[in-house]
Amino acid sequence: MRRVLKITLIVALIGIVVAAIATGLILHFKQKSDSAAISSNQTTTTVIQQNISTSRMTTTIYRSSSVIVTNAATTTNSIITTRASTSTTRSATNNLTVTRVSSAITYDSQAFCPSEDCSISPYYFEAFQLNVTTTGFYIIKCNGSTDMYGLLYAGVFNPFTPSITLIQNGYDVYDDSYQGVLNMTLQASIQYIVVVTTYDSYTDGSYVLTLTGPASVRLSKIVGAGLQSQQSIYSSSLTRNNPSFCQFSSCDAGEFAYFAAFNVNVSMDTTYLISSSSNFDTLGYFYQNYFNASNPSQNIIGADDESAGYSQFALSLYLRVVSRYILVFTTYSFNRTGSFSLLADKPGLISLTPR
Image (cartoon, rainbow, N blue to C red; front, top):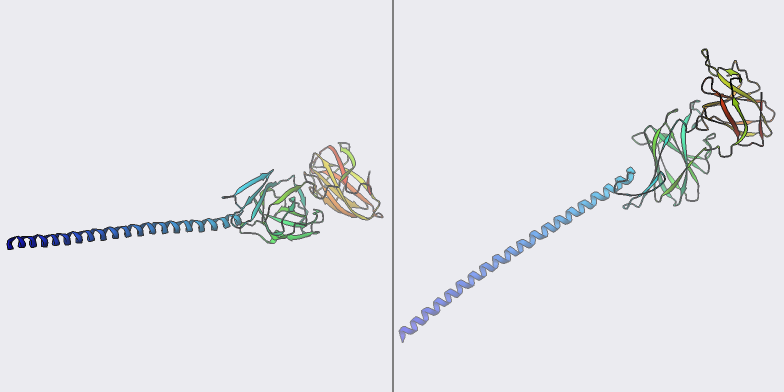
């Protein structure tokens, strides 16, 4: 009996030891499992944080890029709507709209003298009417194949009196590439005209006119700026029967141009605009009192070559009723003949009589 009890106690002790060992093993493996799970969750969290960090960095770069894109007036990551040669781009970041028009100044463009001290050499230009729908701050820039700048006018623009209605001149405001910049607040209730021209006379080149502001701006090119009211007052032809002269300081044999001279009669003291229309390059000279073909620089009060565009002259002069004037129509090329017309903005107040 005592032996059986002893055996029972031994078996019980063995069971207790086995149970303890088993419990320890279970707790050990459970702790490792939990530790592994925690480590796995931390790694996942780190990856998510890295992804979040990467996403934020990308967003920052995108916003910075968008600002640069808008200021640089490019079309990267933008939607372009094109009407004719005009495109409009809208930035989603700062809610600015960029309007562009591509064009070119050529030797057939109109010409003018943008300042009072410029020489007789013409500055070619193009003019655009701006229809502003939203009042705000706008930046106007000319990017060209040559150095260009813009002039901004309010209401109307007359190339023969370019200082009138001028509100901003971009000649002295330019960027690092010597492209003119205009920037100011534009009112939706005012009509504006922007004139694009070159820094140097007798220069042509292509360009892109860019307007950046709170809304799109409609651009309409003005054809024949200042000449819209012109009407024909005389038509004729230059032939080999017309007299010829040397319009320069000296001419070699055969370097003479045919001309037609007219007495100019006006019935009111005011400013008159006289221009030519033909299919060849013309010159216009205006004289007071008399004209001497052997000395064409004497008594001259006005001369022009290309202010009307397409190699046609245009003269704007204040004329008095009591004075005597002579207009001489001639050609830039020697021995050129052909038909022509002379036009004026006040046809009821001015007339021409052939001499």
